[in-house]
Image (cartoon, rainbow, N blue to C red; front, side, top):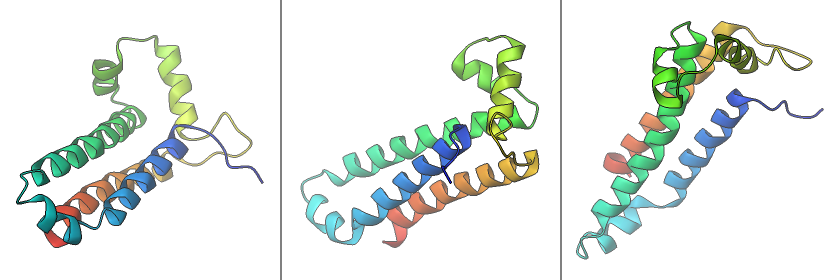
Length: 127
Protein backbone atom coordinates (compact mmCIF):
# COMPACT_ATOMS: atom_id res chain seq x y z
CA UNK A 1 0.00 0.00 0.00
CA UNK A 2 1.47 3.29 -1.09
CA UNK A 3 1.27 6.34 1.15
CA UNK A 4 -1.08 8.97 -0.24
CA UNK A 5 0.45 12.26 -1.20
CA UNK A 6 -1.08 15.54 -0.22
CA UNK A 7 -0.59 18.64 1.89
CA UNK A 8 -1.52 16.82 5.10
CA UNK A 9 1.17 14.21 4.47
CA UNK A 10 3.69 16.97 3.79
CA UNK A 11 2.75 18.73 7.02
CA UNK A 12 3.15 15.47 8.94
CA UNK A 13 6.59 14.80 7.47
CA UNK A 14 7.72 18.39 8.09
CA UNK A 15 6.56 18.17 11.70
CA UNK A 16 8.44 14.91 12.22
CA UNK A 17 11.54 16.44 10.66
CA UNK A 18 11.36 19.45 12.98
CA UNK A 19 10.82 17.36 16.11
CA UNK A 20 13.68 15.00 15.24
CA UNK A 21 16.06 17.86 14.48
CA UNK A 22 15.32 19.50 17.82
CA UNK A 23 15.68 16.18 19.61
CA UNK A 24 18.97 15.19 17.96
CA UNK A 25 20.62 18.60 18.38
CA UNK A 26 21.10 17.73 22.08
CA UNK A 27 20.52 21.20 23.48
CA UNK A 28 21.82 20.16 26.90
CA UNK A 29 25.26 19.48 25.38
CA UNK A 30 25.24 22.26 22.82
CA UNK A 31 24.12 25.14 25.06
CA UNK A 32 27.16 25.14 27.43
CA UNK A 33 29.55 25.10 24.47
CA UNK A 34 27.87 27.79 22.39
CA UNK A 35 26.75 30.19 25.12
CA UNK A 36 30.27 31.48 25.93
CA UNK A 37 30.84 32.04 22.20
CA UNK A 38 27.56 33.98 21.93
CA UNK A 39 26.29 31.55 19.30
CA UNK A 40 23.44 30.01 21.28
CA UNK A 41 21.12 32.88 20.33
CA UNK A 42 21.77 32.17 16.66
CA UNK A 43 20.83 28.51 17.11
CA UNK A 44 17.57 29.09 18.95
CA UNK A 45 16.53 31.92 16.61
CA UNK A 46 17.19 29.66 13.61
CA UNK A 47 15.20 26.81 15.19
CA UNK A 48 12.37 29.20 16.04
CA UNK A 49 12.25 30.51 12.46
CA UNK A 50 12.41 26.97 11.07
CA UNK A 51 9.48 25.92 13.25
CA UNK A 52 7.55 29.11 12.52
CA UNK A 53 7.62 28.40 8.78
CA UNK A 54 6.08 24.96 9.33
CA UNK A 55 3.62 26.30 11.90
CA UNK A 56 2.34 29.07 9.61
CA UNK A 57 1.95 26.69 6.66
CA UNK A 58 -0.14 24.34 8.79
CA UNK A 59 -2.09 27.24 10.30
CA UNK A 60 -3.01 28.68 6.90
CA UNK A 61 -4.16 25.29 5.64
CA UNK A 62 -6.13 24.72 8.85
CA UNK A 63 -7.87 28.06 8.42
CA UNK A 64 -8.67 27.19 4.81
CA UNK A 65 -10.05 23.81 5.83
CA UNK A 66 -12.25 25.46 8.46
CA UNK A 67 -13.78 27.71 5.78
CA UNK A 68 -11.76 30.87 6.43
CA UNK A 69 -9.53 31.39 3.38
CA UNK A 70 -8.50 34.97 4.27
CA UNK A 71 -5.20 34.04 5.94
CA UNK A 72 -4.37 31.56 3.17
CA UNK A 73 -4.96 34.23 0.52
CA UNK A 74 -2.90 36.77 2.45
CA UNK A 75 0.13 34.45 2.49
CA UNK A 76 -0.16 32.77 -0.91
CA UNK A 77 -1.92 35.42 -2.97
CA UNK A 78 -5.40 35.81 -4.33
CA UNK A 79 -6.42 32.69 -6.22
CA UNK A 80 -9.58 31.42 -7.81
CA UNK A 81 -12.21 29.85 -5.55
CA UNK A 82 -12.10 26.66 -7.62
CA UNK A 83 -8.40 26.28 -6.76
CA UNK A 84 -9.17 26.71 -3.05
CA UNK A 85 -11.94 24.12 -3.27
CA UNK A 86 -9.59 21.68 -4.99
CA UNK A 87 -6.91 22.33 -2.35
CA UNK A 88 -9.46 21.73 0.43
CA UNK A 89 -10.27 18.38 -1.17
CA UNK A 90 -6.56 17.57 -1.23
CA UNK A 91 -6.36 18.28 2.52
CA UNK A 92 -8.94 15.54 3.11
CA UNK A 93 -7.49 13.22 0.44
CA UNK A 94 -10.65 13.33 -1.67
CA UNK A 95 -8.40 13.22 -4.73
CA UNK A 96 -7.21 9.70 -3.86
CA UNK A 97 -8.69 6.28 -3.28
CA UNK A 98 -9.66 6.94 0.33
CA UNK A 99 -10.56 10.14 2.11
CA UNK A 100 -10.71 11.37 5.68
CA UNK A 101 -13.19 13.65 7.36
CA UNK A 102 -12.65 17.37 7.73
CA UNK A 103 -12.63 16.89 11.50
CA UNK A 104 -9.82 14.34 11.28
CA UNK A 105 -7.72 16.61 9.07
CA UNK A 106 -8.41 19.57 11.33
CA UNK A 107 -7.52 17.62 14.45
CA UNK A 108 -4.35 16.27 12.87
CA UNK A 109 -3.24 19.78 11.96
CA UNK A 110 -3.95 21.03 15.49
CA UNK A 111 -1.86 18.17 16.91
CA UNK A 112 0.98 18.97 14.52
CA UNK A 113 0.93 22.65 15.51
CA UNK A 114 0.95 21.64 19.17
CA UNK A 115 3.88 19.27 18.55
CA UNK A 116 5.89 22.08 16.96
CA UNK A 117 5.24 24.43 19.89
CA UNK A 118 5.91 21.79 22.55
CA UNK A 119 9.12 20.69 20.82
CA UNK A 120 10.45 24.23 20.70
CA UNK A 121 9.56 24.88 24.35
CA UNK A 122 11.26 21.62 25.32
CA UNK A 123 14.33 22.55 23.24
CA UNK A 124 14.61 26.01 24.80
CA UNK A 125 13.76 25.43 28.43
CA UNK A 126 13.74 21.76 29.38
CA UNK A 127 16.56 20.11 27.44
